[in-house]
Length: 318
Image (cartoon, rainbow, N blue to C red; front, top):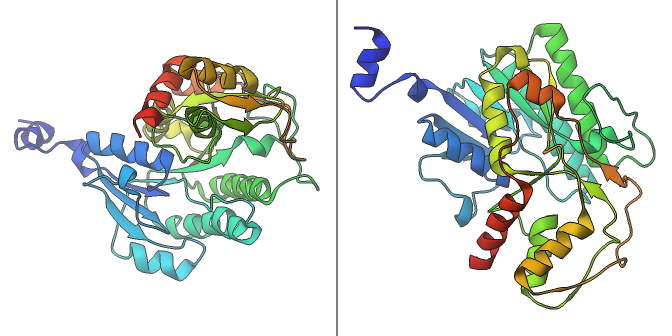
């Protein structure tokens, strides 16, 4: 009898031995990745600056508190712990707090790759962002570069610097990094200060609420499709040193989404044109996902409106 068969007979298989660390595991994306990893019988550890909210607490996850912008705290928190995979979703979410944004998104990332470069991990997935493309013409592809300028936000600068440093680390020491550039991820349990929850809750209150003109073209991807892409990356050695856009590849006009939610709920009174575009906000921001589809043998499975209806129902019941 093979070793794998013996382990399976006793309720142990290879999946149980896999250990994953999620930085930012108490957040929206982190919660869904952790949930999938637990389902696969992996050992899951999360580090973040706070304990998880009740809606995002998972019994079998080990939650640790750590400020990744401080090297010594990473060493103390992770002492005697080993991992196969690391996913960095960490970073201060209020980007108006410029210093905290820079420290958590860039310095924190720098500290993490310096720490894990000395250890034998199989994969390190870094959460990049669509903001890294700046005003590049849509659809944006992974070969496009963007120079930091006066209009670039601190968050954008931090993500660009992190991607550049991560790829340099791969080139110099074969550090097993993969960068994923998220577009607008949505779904149940997302923070209420994100676009889709804001619109849903605004409509549920059935009062007037301010919106932009809604002319912006944006790409939304349902959380389950993001999670499936992440696990494809973890299991593909050739994904190391690569950048992947993660979106649906089907842009939507924001006004059309707002109107769909309003009509679906038969509630709400959006007031268009009362919120101006930010200086660093392009009118068209959506990706080419050809590389991810071909390289990872992955494609989004959840239709946008199917995912949106699921999300609406979640907030209706919340």
